[in-house]
Image (cartoon, rainbow, N blue to C red):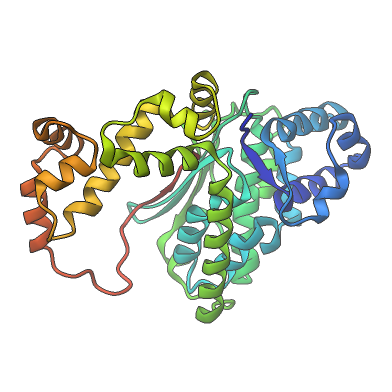
Length: 353
C-alpha cells in the first residue's frame, strides 16, 4: 500500500520541537509503532499519518496547541534534507524558494507548495494534505515557522513578512504566534502563506555558492528519481510508453505487466492521486509535446505512436489538451525564439503525486 511519507530530516525537526516542551519522543515513537533509531538514517521515511498522530499526541500531552511553532527555533538547512543545502547555496531567496518548491517532495509528500510573485512582493503558499487522516494545523504552522526562521538564518537578520496567513481559526492565545511571526497575522485564510517584500527576496544571500548549488541540484534530482521509481504511477507510465505504439493499452494488460490485479492497480494509482484513465491521458499529452518538437515526425506517425487507431481521434484529443490543432502547435513551436539562458518562468508549483 502506497502512503505519503515524510523524510527523517523533517521528522527529526519535529522531534526537537516536541522535546522543547519536555516530551519523551522515544517513548512516543514506541507508542506509535515508529522506529526512533531510523531518525539517524538520512534516507529513512515515515508515514504521513504517523506524523499526524505524533502531532495530535504531542498537543494532548503538552497542552500546547501552538507547539508546532517550536520548529522555527530548531530549524537548520539540514532539516530540509538536500533541498535545504540547495536553498542555502542559491544566489537569492527567490532562487532558493524556487529550488525548495522543486524538491519539496523530498522533505515531505503531504503538501502542495508554491512560490510566486505578487503585487509588490512574493508569496510562499502552502496547502497541507492528510493521507488517511486529516492534517493537523500544527504541521502547517511548523512549516511556516521553519520557512521564516530559515530566511533569517540564511540572511543573518530578522526577516519581517508583509503578512502571514493561516487556514486555522484564530487561537485563544495569540502570543506564541506574535513571537514567531513579526508581522500582521490573518486567520481563517484559504491557505497558509508567508508574504514577503520583494527586496528581501531578491537580496544576495551571503551563503550563495553557484558550484555547490549545481552539486546539490544533482544530488536532489538523483534522490527524486530514485524516490519516484518506487511509485506505481512511475512504473505504470513506463509500461504505457512501451505499449502505446501497439495501440491503446488496456488496464488489465498494464496490471499484468506490473504483476498486480486490476483492482490493486486502480487502488494504488488512486492512493497516489491519479487513475488509470488520467495517467493514460497525461502520458499521451506529454509524449505528444515531445514528438511534435521533432520536426522529422509526421502527424500520422505521432498519432499511431500515441496508440490512436484513427488519426482523427488524436486530433480531437489534442484539441482538448491544448485548445489548438497539432499543426498549429508545431508551427508555434517553430516560430518561438530559443530561450535565453537562465530565463525562468514566473510561477513555481510543486504538487504531490
